[in-house]
Length: 227
Image (tube, rainbow, N blue to C red; front, side, top):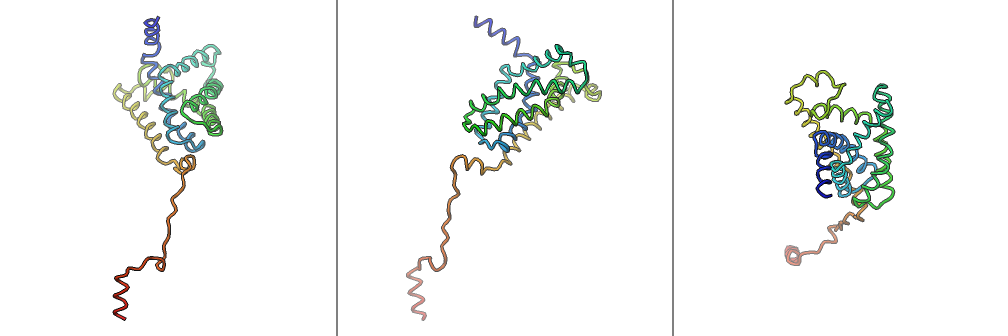
């Protein structure tokens, strides 16, 4: 039983298409979800990093298979032949419920206990799904076309005619940009939110005036002799 499960997972998950799909979705969503968590929800950096790691692990473990379910839904409903607007509307309706179910679980598992922050993070992700699902679907399709994992019919001619080496460079630049933008969000996040969450208080510095400073007895004796 264990061996059969192992071979099944190997056939389903450890494929070029799965790796390409997952990498594309993760690299697209990282900077945006990090901004939602840090700037909108005011989550602490440890919680946000844990949610990034957990989300990435789940995606590579099989959650990104939802991309294939999305493709199946497109074919089943006939939306794949009805133009870009219908495809975009389908992607929005497909992504919002998934984000609403998965994100709260990830935040709870990452150690977030504030219901308001979980709600803001989840609603922000659902909003991202509503606004950017079409762009993410296009990004994933082009990414798969560049990696050779899946042929994309609407690939721009300039990219389609590019050499394999050029396509790999474009993919590398996309991944580097994702990591760079995510790091930038963390570095620019107002740290006062984390200080407030941890009960941090700025140390009070005691100001001592010149009159309150203790006098040196030696210097005092010298002054009296001079006088």
